[in-house]
Length: 97
Image (cartoon, rainbow, N blue to C red; front, side, top):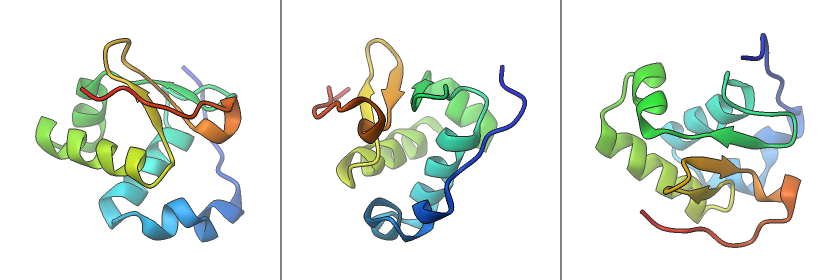
């Protein structure tokens, strides 16, 4: 587990963040700075991690994650329980739950 996470200040003016709800912004910051993200923008993504760490129910976590996919911040493989910021890896598609 990493000890700290950083987020580039330009992220606050990004199209993805501006289009996201407040809950979406929180989840985006969680992914970028949280304990499950790697330096290349991939994150381990069991929904239970999000629910426990942010104290959300499963439905809220899934809806907010779907929002981040919709605004283009995240690409998600629900079966593998992995997510990525597509700008880091050049990933273009996602698999729905």
